[in-house]
Length: 244
Image (cartoon, rainbow, N blue to C red):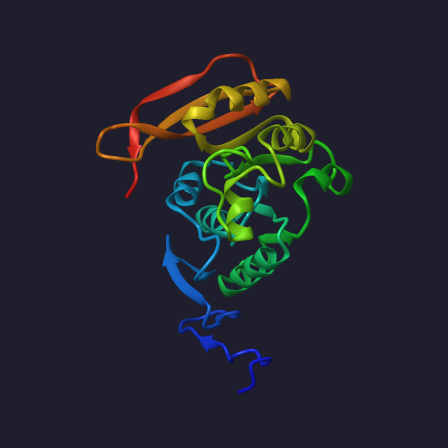
Protein backbone atom coordinates (compact mmCIF):
# COMPACT_ATOMS: atom_id res chain seq x y z
CA UNK A 1 0.00 0.00 0.00
CA UNK A 2 1.39 3.41 -0.94
CA UNK A 3 1.90 6.04 1.76
CA UNK A 4 -0.67 8.33 0.17
CA UNK A 5 -3.41 5.72 0.45
CA UNK A 6 -5.81 5.68 3.38
CA UNK A 7 -5.44 2.46 5.41
CA UNK A 8 -8.49 0.20 5.35
CA UNK A 9 -10.82 0.55 8.37
CA UNK A 10 -11.40 -2.11 10.94
CA UNK A 11 -15.01 -3.12 11.53
CA UNK A 12 -16.44 -3.38 15.04
CA UNK A 13 -19.02 -5.99 15.98
CA UNK A 14 -22.60 -5.45 17.06
CA UNK A 15 -25.64 -3.91 15.44
CA UNK A 16 -25.97 -0.50 13.89
CA UNK A 17 -24.16 1.30 11.11
CA UNK A 18 -21.07 3.50 11.10
CA UNK A 19 -18.94 1.00 12.99
CA UNK A 20 -15.84 1.25 10.81
CA UNK A 21 -12.88 1.98 13.06
CA UNK A 22 -9.59 3.10 11.52
CA UNK A 23 -6.20 2.09 12.91
CA UNK A 24 -5.76 5.51 14.56
CA UNK A 25 -9.09 5.14 16.42
CA UNK A 26 -10.57 3.17 19.30
CA UNK A 27 -14.09 1.82 19.81
CA UNK A 28 -15.15 2.23 23.45
CA UNK A 29 -18.35 1.24 25.23
CA UNK A 30 -19.74 3.12 28.23
CA UNK A 31 -23.22 3.80 29.61
CA UNK A 32 -24.63 1.32 27.04
CA UNK A 33 -23.35 3.37 24.10
CA UNK A 34 -20.43 2.85 21.75
CA UNK A 35 -18.07 5.70 20.95
CA UNK A 36 -15.33 5.96 18.32
CA UNK A 37 -12.43 8.18 19.39
CA UNK A 38 -9.02 9.10 18.07
CA UNK A 39 -6.19 7.34 19.88
CA UNK A 40 -4.28 10.64 20.02
CA UNK A 41 -5.69 14.09 20.58
CA UNK A 42 -8.91 14.97 22.38
CA UNK A 43 -10.71 12.07 24.09
CA UNK A 44 -13.72 12.27 26.37
CA UNK A 45 -13.07 12.28 30.12
CA UNK A 46 -14.95 11.33 33.27
CA UNK A 47 -16.22 14.95 33.34
CA UNK A 48 -18.34 14.22 30.27
CA UNK A 49 -19.88 11.11 31.83
CA UNK A 50 -20.71 12.95 35.06
CA UNK A 51 -22.20 15.86 33.15
CA UNK A 52 -24.48 13.52 31.20
CA UNK A 53 -25.52 11.76 34.42
CA UNK A 54 -26.26 14.99 36.31
CA UNK A 55 -28.11 16.80 33.51
CA UNK A 56 -31.89 16.42 33.80
CA UNK A 57 -33.78 17.82 30.81
CA UNK A 58 -37.49 17.02 30.83
CA UNK A 59 -39.07 14.59 28.39
CA UNK A 60 -39.55 16.00 24.88
CA UNK A 61 -37.22 18.93 25.64
CA UNK A 62 -35.26 20.69 22.93
CA UNK A 63 -31.64 20.35 24.05
CA UNK A 64 -28.54 22.15 22.77
CA UNK A 65 -25.03 20.87 23.46
CA UNK A 66 -22.28 23.44 22.99
CA UNK A 67 -18.94 21.84 22.08
CA UNK A 68 -19.94 18.22 21.62
CA UNK A 69 -16.48 16.76 20.88
CA UNK A 70 -17.10 13.11 19.93
CA UNK A 71 -20.79 13.34 20.91
CA UNK A 72 -20.61 11.28 24.11
CA UNK A 73 -22.80 13.62 26.21
CA UNK A 74 -25.59 14.01 23.65
CA UNK A 75 -25.64 10.29 22.95
CA UNK A 76 -25.84 9.32 26.64
CA UNK A 77 -28.60 11.90 27.20
CA UNK A 78 -30.55 10.56 24.23
CA UNK A 79 -30.11 7.01 25.50
CA UNK A 80 -31.37 8.09 28.94
CA UNK A 81 -34.33 10.13 27.63
CA UNK A 82 -35.20 8.97 24.08
CA UNK A 83 -37.84 11.69 23.56
CA UNK A 84 -35.25 14.49 23.60
CA UNK A 85 -34.49 16.41 20.43
CA UNK A 86 -30.81 17.34 20.63
CA UNK A 87 -28.71 19.74 18.56
CA UNK A 88 -24.99 19.08 19.05
CA UNK A 89 -22.58 21.84 17.99
CA UNK A 90 -18.87 21.41 17.33
CA UNK A 91 -16.43 23.95 15.85
CA UNK A 92 -13.82 21.41 14.70
CA UNK A 93 -14.84 19.76 11.44
CA UNK A 94 -13.03 16.48 12.12
CA UNK A 95 -14.71 16.14 15.53
CA UNK A 96 -18.12 17.04 14.08
CA UNK A 97 -17.76 14.27 11.49
CA UNK A 98 -16.73 11.86 14.25
CA UNK A 99 -19.86 12.80 16.20
CA UNK A 100 -22.00 12.09 13.14
CA UNK A 101 -20.43 8.62 12.86
CA UNK A 102 -21.11 7.95 16.54
CA UNK A 103 -24.72 9.12 16.22
CA UNK A 104 -25.26 6.75 13.28
CA UNK A 105 -23.52 3.86 15.04
CA UNK A 106 -25.85 4.25 18.04
CA UNK A 107 -28.95 4.55 15.80
CA UNK A 108 -29.79 8.04 17.04
CA UNK A 109 -30.09 9.99 13.78
CA UNK A 110 -33.78 10.85 14.47
CA UNK A 111 -32.88 12.32 17.88
CA UNK A 112 -29.55 14.11 17.39
CA UNK A 113 -28.52 16.60 14.71
CA UNK A 114 -24.92 17.79 14.42
CA UNK A 115 -23.87 21.32 13.43
CA UNK A 116 -20.25 22.14 12.52
CA UNK A 117 -20.12 25.83 13.44
CA UNK A 118 -18.46 28.27 15.79
CA UNK A 119 -20.58 28.63 18.94
CA UNK A 120 -20.43 32.42 18.61
CA UNK A 121 -22.22 32.21 15.24
CA UNK A 122 -25.24 30.33 16.58
CA UNK A 123 -27.44 33.39 17.29
CA UNK A 124 -27.30 34.08 13.53
CA UNK A 125 -28.46 30.61 12.48
CA UNK A 126 -30.67 29.32 15.31
CA UNK A 127 -33.92 30.91 16.56
CA UNK A 128 -33.79 32.86 19.81
CA UNK A 129 -35.40 31.44 22.96
CA UNK A 130 -35.72 28.08 21.21
CA UNK A 131 -34.13 25.59 23.61
CA UNK A 132 -35.41 24.22 26.91
CA UNK A 133 -32.02 22.97 28.08
CA UNK A 134 -28.36 23.67 27.27
CA UNK A 135 -25.51 21.39 28.28
CA UNK A 136 -21.80 22.12 27.88
CA UNK A 137 -18.42 20.92 29.06
CA UNK A 138 -16.47 24.08 28.20
CA UNK A 139 -12.73 24.69 28.11
CA UNK A 140 -11.65 25.60 31.65
CA UNK A 141 -8.38 27.44 31.17
CA UNK A 142 -7.47 30.90 29.84
CA UNK A 143 -5.03 30.73 26.87
CA UNK A 144 -1.98 31.71 28.98
CA UNK A 145 -2.79 29.34 31.85
CA UNK A 146 -0.74 26.19 32.37
CA UNK A 147 0.77 23.91 29.76
CA UNK A 148 -0.89 23.99 26.35
CA UNK A 149 -1.17 20.68 24.51
CA UNK A 150 0.73 20.55 21.20
CA UNK A 151 -2.31 18.77 19.75
CA UNK A 152 -4.65 21.44 18.36
CA UNK A 153 -7.88 19.52 19.03
CA UNK A 154 -6.95 18.90 22.64
CA UNK A 155 -5.75 22.49 23.13
CA UNK A 156 -9.04 23.92 21.83
CA UNK A 157 -10.97 21.60 24.17
CA UNK A 158 -8.98 22.54 27.27
CA UNK A 159 -8.13 26.22 26.78
CA UNK A 160 -10.26 29.22 25.78
CA UNK A 161 -8.68 29.69 22.34
CA UNK A 162 -11.89 29.61 20.31
CA UNK A 163 -14.53 30.45 22.93
CA UNK A 164 -14.62 31.92 26.45
CA UNK A 165 -17.04 31.24 29.28
CA UNK A 166 -18.60 34.66 28.69
CA UNK A 167 -19.13 33.80 24.98
CA UNK A 168 -20.90 30.62 26.04
CA UNK A 169 -23.17 32.43 28.48
CA UNK A 170 -23.97 35.19 25.98
CA UNK A 171 -25.01 32.64 23.35
CA UNK A 172 -26.93 30.61 25.93
CA UNK A 173 -28.93 33.63 27.05
CA UNK A 174 -29.96 34.23 23.45
CA UNK A 175 -30.93 30.62 22.69
CA UNK A 176 -32.49 29.52 26.00
CA UNK A 177 -36.17 29.98 26.67
CA UNK A 178 -37.07 32.09 29.69
CA UNK A 179 -36.84 29.71 32.67
CA UNK A 180 -34.83 27.35 30.48
CA UNK A 181 -31.99 25.56 32.26
CA UNK A 182 -28.27 25.23 31.62
CA UNK A 183 -25.98 22.46 32.90
CA UNK A 184 -22.19 22.43 32.92
CA UNK A 185 -19.05 21.24 34.70
CA UNK A 186 -16.36 23.78 35.48
CA UNK A 187 -13.14 24.11 37.41
CA UNK A 188 -13.61 25.17 41.05
CA UNK A 189 -10.77 27.71 41.02
CA UNK A 190 -12.64 29.74 38.37
CA UNK A 191 -16.03 29.58 40.05
CA UNK A 192 -16.10 33.36 40.53
CA UNK A 193 -15.52 33.83 36.77
CA UNK A 194 -18.31 31.37 35.99
CA UNK A 195 -20.90 32.96 38.28
CA UNK A 196 -19.94 36.43 37.07
CA UNK A 197 -20.44 35.41 33.42
CA UNK A 198 -23.74 33.70 34.22
CA UNK A 199 -25.22 36.67 36.05
CA UNK A 200 -23.89 39.11 33.46
CA UNK A 201 -26.00 37.23 30.93
CA UNK A 202 -29.08 36.80 33.16
CA UNK A 203 -28.54 33.09 33.86
CA UNK A 204 -28.92 32.60 37.60
CA UNK A 205 -26.90 29.82 39.30
CA UNK A 206 -29.45 27.64 41.10
CA UNK A 207 -27.68 24.40 42.04
CA UNK A 208 -24.06 23.38 42.55
CA UNK A 209 -22.61 19.97 43.36
CA UNK A 210 -18.97 19.35 44.23
CA UNK A 211 -16.98 16.63 42.50
CA UNK A 212 -14.32 14.82 44.50
CA UNK A 213 -11.33 14.15 42.26
CA UNK A 214 -8.74 12.72 44.66
CA UNK A 215 -8.40 10.82 47.92
CA UNK A 216 -7.44 13.97 49.86
CA UNK A 217 -10.94 15.36 49.41
CA UNK A 218 -9.89 18.38 47.36
CA UNK A 219 -12.68 19.67 45.13
CA UNK A 220 -11.31 20.74 41.76
CA UNK A 221 -14.46 20.49 39.66
CA UNK A 222 -18.08 21.51 40.24
CA UNK A 223 -21.33 20.84 38.43
CA UNK A 224 -23.57 23.89 38.12
CA UNK A 225 -27.11 24.31 36.82
CA UNK A 226 -28.51 27.75 36.07
CA UNK A 227 -31.88 29.16 34.98
CA UNK A 228 -32.40 31.98 32.52
CA UNK A 229 -34.12 34.87 34.33
CA UNK A 230 -34.16 32.74 37.48
CA UNK A 231 -34.56 34.19 40.97
CA UNK A 232 -31.50 34.34 43.29
CA UNK A 233 -30.98 31.34 45.52
CA UNK A 234 -28.22 28.73 45.19
CA UNK A 235 -28.50 25.19 46.52
CA UNK A 236 -25.10 23.62 47.28
CA UNK A 237 -24.59 19.91 47.76
CA UNK A 238 -22.34 19.18 50.75
CA UNK A 239 -21.53 15.63 49.65
CA UNK A 240 -18.97 15.50 46.84
CA UNK A 241 -19.50 13.13 43.97
CA UNK A 242 -16.73 10.57 43.76
CA UNK A 243 -15.47 9.84 40.25
CA UNK A 244 -15.48 6.17 39.33
